[in-house]
Amino acid sequence: MYRAAWIFLFLLELVLGVFIVILFVQSKDALPQGVIFVSVLGFLLLTVDWIRSKET
Image (cartoon, rainbow, N blue to C red; front, side):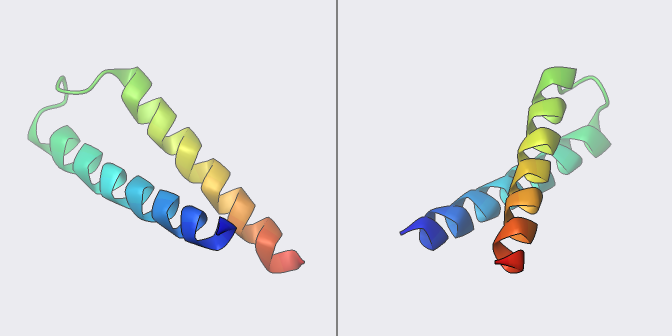
């Protein structure tokens, strides 16, 4: 259950990241800074969680 939820979150974050990059390339003013910050923070948290799961 935990693994499936984690994979879903990771894929969601990946899609969100690609979407944000596309929007950012099209026009720099399209996104508020908060959206980018939350996305990057979420990705970092998922990465840290993945590294910790690999250690155990």
